[in-house]
Image (cartoon, rainbow, N blue to C red; front, side, top):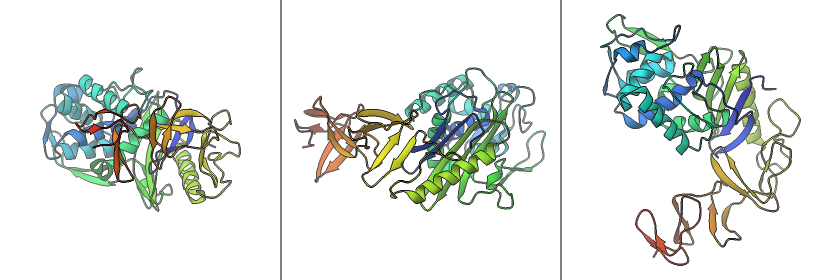
Length: 369
């Protein structure tokens, strides 16, 4: 039983959402926000660049916010800032990185929201780079899983978020010091340690409660667990989610595998597989059939027999679509079939008799000539 108000479990290897509790409900994320901040910084900065802390960065914080007690004029590299952001969860570092990348928190928040939308997030709005209390700063468990998936696909974020401790240099008011990560499941000598953990991020504010994001990989299966609005059950909830996900991975390909969710014997929304193929149980307990569903940011088609579509499919409107082996609809990409190339547009429809966005002509049958 998941005690937190919100939770999601995403198989990052396949893109399939395995479990969701209030997955599309908006919650305050607190410091798990910093995974998005770190991702944008890693994508837009040289790690050896110097970040100079402004007065705004060091003072634009609420009372009691975690910080490194940095002051105006302090300097750290981008790399050092990322460790301070994800290990110490230092909030003035989030401000400084936002200013370094975009010039201001507001402009950086615009980047965060654009990146979230590009990842398929539909109920997310960021107003700052750190996650401190703001009524207009929110996300959902399902959206946060997509953000975390992208973050842990980035090598820099993955390295930082898996590091137990890091040495920071002296600054104006501080001697050199060592900071340690707050996520307890990373420490081998802690009872909460979880084998295969890649990294994660903790969060807490009075409004958000405990929040936790965890990435774990075992035997080629990468899972992302998100827990939101928890009252100190974030680690036990995360363990239950991960245990369930890896047990489900073992059962894949076994007819009748239980996909009811962690800690419950009742059917719930989620993926399952039998000898015919993959299908999806909706929240009302019925199987998705003859319909489109957006799951974890990807579009899936379920045929009249209630199975996930794979490969080429022609619809009643005459348009051709292609579905990857994961079931996700192909968009904005080339697909090679029988030594011929076809282009799928932004809406998933195969282009015909036109020029593709990257400048190649396809004929009336969609074939690149």
